[in-house]
Length: 394
Ligand code: FEO
Image (cartoon, rainbow, N blue to C red; front, side):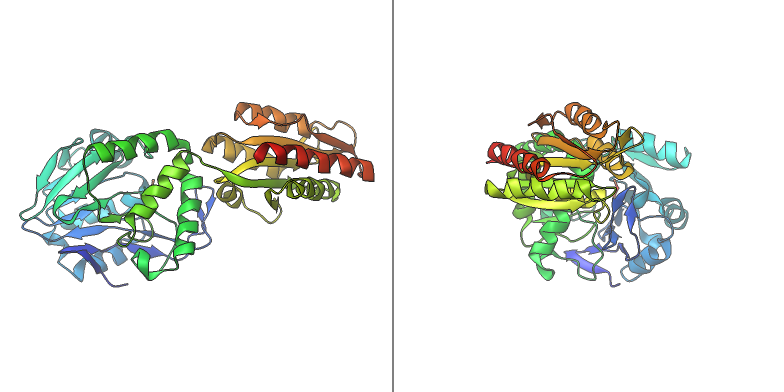
């Protein structure tokens, strides 16, 4: 890849990971990038590095602009290892005068790399660093999405280096938002939000208001993953506002797993009932839909109806996996219900309802259970369940 100038004397020098398919449980069928940025000024600054194993490519991209030994400062905006795996190797070569990070960043770097001899310089919100012709302002973004996280803002370029925020896991040869299909870009951004940032939605609301209060005018947003927002930074900020307020639309999901297709028959009837009420419905079989696909669709859905057969007094394993993942991502303001077939115990519906209560879903109905194979009457009950939820969604 080519190093790319993104503002005057500021370059993308990151790496593209075409092959990654799983990011701690989040399916990444389109790969990712680990963006790093290089500011060449009287002081030369590298912002973030990359995942372990990519130091060769990172150094090659830096060398297209300057010799790595010319770098004076390394800013660590986020300590997660997709951005610091290369850091020890890069520090050995660069021998930076300063490693600039938040107070929590220093703690996290020490806990990861156990190097108390590195030249840390701790910064906090509002502190600035002059590099000659440019001024970097630091903004701590604690718990977005790690305690150490911070943004770096280049005042002269109105450029926000936003680490994980506003990113996408999407490997491309293009670097800018206006060089790719905008629908795909928004889909990838929403998928990323739903699977990584959703639990921090309240903090994101606060951050958006803090950024306004700090009076930061932003022309370019350069995240640590995916495309750089130079054409429409306002579009992704507006989307983050919507997503963090968990605004939903007239849409419902029917998510199910099935042993011998009885629960699948029920799922289709529930979907019919939802559609009858004019709700946009998506039927998702866990055999073919990854947990990350479900979360992506959940982002703007008002209701989710969960179906599982009962297996060994519990729900099917893929449903248990989905609910554990979903619970951690803390969706809010959703309507839910459950259904499923069973042979004898029939516990799955009750167990799902218990988890929906823990997630504070509004439970629309105690649910529908069917012994073995549904009759036409049973399927009509499923249609009624879908209709009942549909009337709540509208
Ligand atoms: Fe891209 Fe939280 O690391």
